Length: 308
Image (cartoon, rainbow, N blue to C red; front, side, top):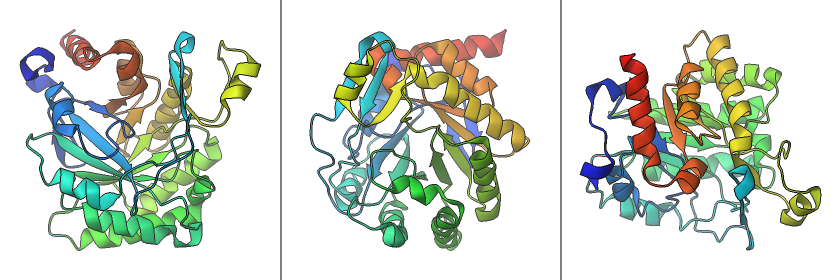
């Protein structure tokens, strides 16, 4: 599998927030929720894998059906609700790692944990995962957890990030901490995010999560209503995700490393995000629709761009 799917070329190597990536294409959180197939994904040509979202306790997530394909729009709507087997299960899986794939740990709070105690859940997951992952992704932007978006407010978010950062600086081997943000933030809110990153001194941003907006879909309003709530990913998210990346990159004078995700359905989409200011790119919905060759196609296109 490695021989078939992997593109080995030093020009694809990236060093971002102190980590050395073999190539800039990763798999986004949500696919390998319980750290069960990260080695296999590494053999399929990915430069890194983000596992999770992981919570302290196992939870079933939202009632089914909760995942819907919108094939004509090359998109998905999901309201999974952080379904996972809990951080202890995940750690046991990570201890059996066989490959050298870079692993990110995407962490969140349990649904039943009130927001005023959310920091405890994030700290618990950080403490459990920190010795077994290469970076931590703080997820406060998933639209499928009740009231989670309130944690994107400046004070609440600063409290979480600063406390995680305080823990991190005491480690002999510090790990990058990244913040995953929503595409539905206004420019004023994005300005606050930039300030938060500077104040908390975390290492970067993952832009973006799924959206609650339903603009530009070809299916009927009746069908959208029938599907119900959830985060939209895939092609309709592409433009907005790139806008957020470009805005943060420009406003921060390219000083905040950005991991791009959202609407990468073609190789050109990936290159566009890198040109907008991202250092790395993740795929999820594009991997579902385009299949296992997609990663190799993106890496070959990036190589071609670099060699022009």
